[in-house]
Image 1 (spheres, rainbow, N blue to C red):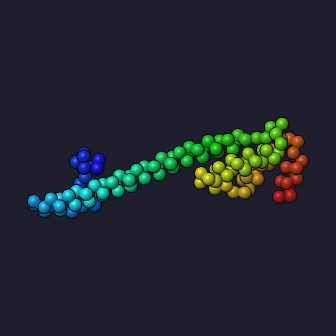
Image 2: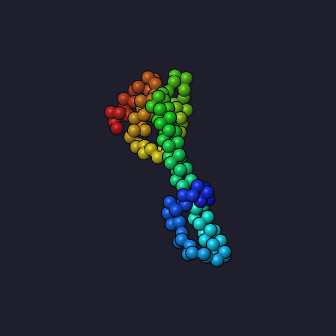
Image 3: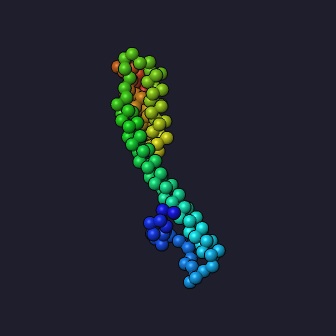
Length: 130
């Protein structure tokens, strides 16, 4: 409808067949309704495409924020290792939901690098035995 109002309907793809000279009112009304329906479909198509672009950009921004949290994450002395691990798994799942591919090796390295110094012997043992 907005295309018709602004007189740019002819630029909409598949705008319809032109009417012959002096068509009957019924044919004119049918043609007008068909044009409106096609215009509405194109508007919805445009809105859908626009929403997908916006969603994609929001998803990228969200992924960047989660990656930042993931990179800065470390275990505090007062944290329990289980709580730290749960936070890490949560961030990893959020990144996967945003389309990021997370390899298990990378996640395991992050787990080992996040642990405090009281786990150094365990970390060394795991790294050496792989």
